[in-house]
Amino acid sequence: MIVAGVDIGSLTTETVVFDSERGVLGYSILLTGGSSKRASRLSLEQAIRYANIRREDIERIVATGCARGIADFADRKVTEITCIAKGVNHLFPDARTIIDIGGQDTKVIKVDGEGRVVEFDMNDKCAAGTGRFLEVMA
Image (cartoon, rainbow, N blue to C red; front, side, top):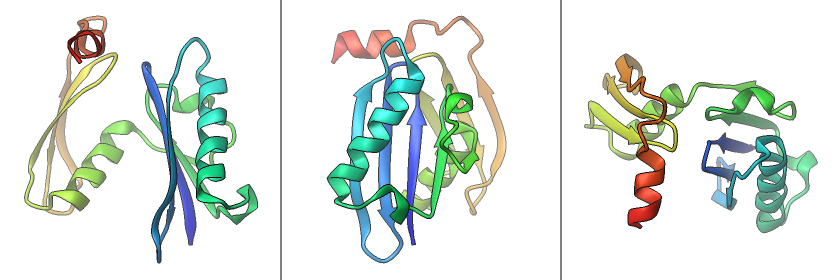
């Protein structure tokens, strides 16, 4: 089964095309810029092209990130907190605390052994400069 995930963030938009049998087929990372909708569509198109498949080959598209609501092409929209928890659990099954520093906020997420969110907190200070600080330091 081929699926795609699109993370539409305030600074970057990332897409991955994944096959349950073959793994990652393609991906794209773009600066979001002034149009989240445009960036999300372009990122998906690039990842599909990289994967050398047709859009019709994708059975499900999931959108996440702060601008997931604009992804009218997505079959499902999931909060980034849930996606982060599941992704980290898949890669690091023993992790119980996750810190995510993004372009608009910082999240601290507590998860159980199955990657389910037990508790989370976010900064509430108008981005607190988190993403921009990291961008400048890089």
